[in-house]
Each structure stands twice: as C-alpha cells, then as structure tokens.
Image (cartoon, rainbow, N blue to C red; front, side):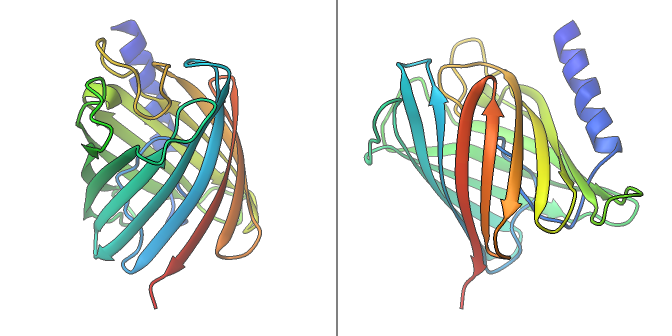
Length: 229
C-alpha cells in the first residue's frame, strides 16, 4: 500500500508540473491522448533485456488516428535475441475530452485487445488516464504530463512527464506499471515495474530519434510521424 501511495504521489506531482499540446509520446507506457486526426506514427525500437536471455527485444509499431479521437495501434514484437514476425499485438484507445487551459484531457483504452501469439500469460488490460500541458518559465514549449491507472498487465497507477528544452531536443521520464501478480508486464516482458528515462532529438519535423534507459536496460528508437495524404 505504501508503494502504491508513493507511486500515486509521484504521478500527481508530475501532473502538477506538466503538460502540452506538444504531442510527444513517452517511452514505453500508453497515454490517454490520441494522435491528431489523420495522423500516423511508425516506430522501430529495441531494448537490451536480460529477462528472457541475453539479447535485444525488438518491436515495430504503427499507431494511427483515422477517426477523430479514436486511435488504433499494432505492434510486431520479438523475443530477446531474435524477432518473431508471428507476434502481433493490437491496442485501441478513445480520447474522451481534450485539455483546456484550466482542465486536463482524459481518455480510456484497451491494451493487448488482440495477441496473435495466443500467449496465456498475455492478458487484455484496460487503462484510463489524464494529460495536461503547462507553460514553465525558461522553457520555450509547454511541458506535458500523463497520469494513468490500469488493470492486469498495466496494473496500478503509472505516469510520466515530457520536458522540451527546444523544438529539437527533449527528455522524458516515466514510471512503468507494476503488472498484476500473476503475469509480467506487457510493456517490457520479464520485469514488473521500474523507472524509465529518455532523450529525444527531432531530426526533422517528422523524424525523431530517442535513446532510453528502461529500468537499467538501454533502448533506442526511430519514430516517423506524418499525416495521411
């Protein structure tokens, strides 16, 4: 209970100091904010994860919002040391309300609504959360924070914050959820909960690179975002 209280307090603190229509995502966790209508995001990432063997856990993701405030995502994932193209995971979320100057936005979602691998240890997980933007003196762009709560493999309270130091460079920090007692995390298999930090660099308005430390494991990603023509 004390750990849950500390986690909630950390997430609430992040919510008090953050936010933004600056729509960068965090490192690993899902968020309640959807991509703008007509936008898609492609990401290739890998994390060095020793939980299932000494190797790299790779992932390829496509997220898109064809219908306003409804985002769907598909992820192809692999096991440490090799990529298994038969592994496919699907998620969907609904941004119920956008943020205003005085109130946060919020939304709900379903993580792992489909798992082609049929893994008994992977369970459909629900989440709900809020996001808020705040302008902080000395920073050129607003800071953005996310606070969420989930079930099953997103069990508990989790959240994070993204801090832009310029239009090119930002850092992010997040707390990855505990997962339930009977299963490991969907987000980083083999672990239950930890902190993650990352640095992001926008090479162009569409192309972004990020380098992360996820619970002591190094990860990297390449993200391409654009709109449907």
